Amino acid sequence: MKILNLKFRNINSLAGDWEIDFTQPQFIENGLFAITGKTGSGKSSILDAISLALYGRTPRVDVTGNNNDVMTRGTSDCYSEIMFETNGNVWKASWKQERTRTKNLKPVQRTIADSEDNIVSDQIKACENKITEILGLTFEQFTKVILLAQGSFAAFLQADKSDKGELLEQITGTEIYGEISKSVFDRSKLENQKLENINIELGAIKILSDEEIQNLQNEISELKKEKNSIDKELNNIEIGKKVLKDISDLHKQIDLAKAKLPELIKNEEVAKDTFEKAEKDVAAIKFEQESLLRFF
Figure (spheres, rainbow, N blue to C red):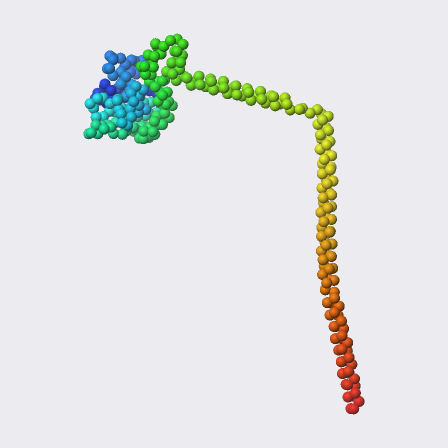
């Protein structure tokens, strides 16, 4: 990240409008420069202005919707705007808050724009997420590795030798490596325990000899033969069941025919009597016809 320009107004002890153009030769030609001055002259206010423009808060003073201790006393507004470059892109971030006529605080206003002044975010939460995305640092990481507060550095200088390591981790943000190391150790311990359990389970598994494997294969072969034989018997049983069903159906048809037989016999006798009567009637008619023919 490279700061190009910083504008701010009424931040802590620095009342009025201020601007620092970091593209001026005195900043470009000198790779290192210091912000110096007496206590209360506003050195930390410049850092607060940078932090406010980027993240909407500072590591020294809390700024909320109902409380703003950053605004210079006796003023009705304050703002900060920073232009910076990162990864070859130029961005502009701003933060602003005003008071009403009744001295109440208005909502904070934040924006992030690109190099063409196109606004890409203008909501507080969206701006916070966008800045973290652009810089690759959260507010906490930014204040530990880039914008180091005076109190943290003083605590490091005055700390005992045994405490400096922990403070150095907090200041530089490298405590993450301690956490990673602990996590790796715990994971290694867990995986080693899993490996030991697997080895115990493997030890409990009986390894079969070639002879035992051959015997099992022979048993499998015999079982397959028995299965085939049983399958054939089942098939024959199914065929037998079908034959029995067909026989049962035939018996039912025979019984039905037997039940109708008396009626058929009776009908046959009636038909026979009818036929014999008809023969007699025909014979009588024939006799009468022959008798009549004799008279002619």
